Image 1 (cartoon, rainbow, N blue to C red):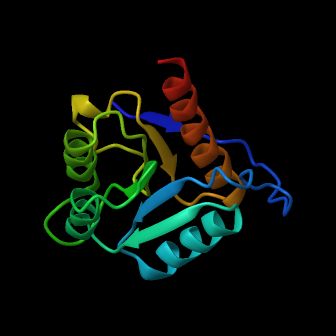
Image 2: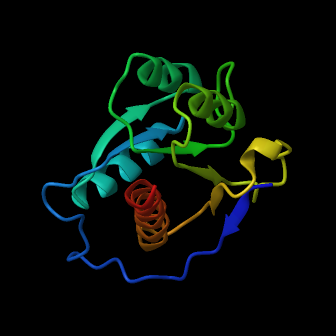
Length: 149
């Protein structure tokens, strides 16, 4: 079961950004274009490098082609053939240990996969502050795992 994130209502401070020289690559997978654009722009404003995909197939093709990716931020319900749960499972098969954060407007009620144990779940609607906290936390955890192992 995914770990539901009820991130605190953090102020959307303009001074929050990733340190220069260590900009991570985030793959944003969201089928709703206005939200995909908003999330992508916000993450870019933090200094992250963003690649956006409108569906699971496009996201998985990007990963299979070797595009740089340090984190996948993926909606659970996607139009097309591949949903967010399958994106997570297949992304981790392609790149074991790849950090993932799921977004859901349904509160994660339809997340049956055991492969999602411990995956952060950001409930929609969310603030940009909550998005910032969850993404930077996931990237920080991944960096700590890499440096200690």
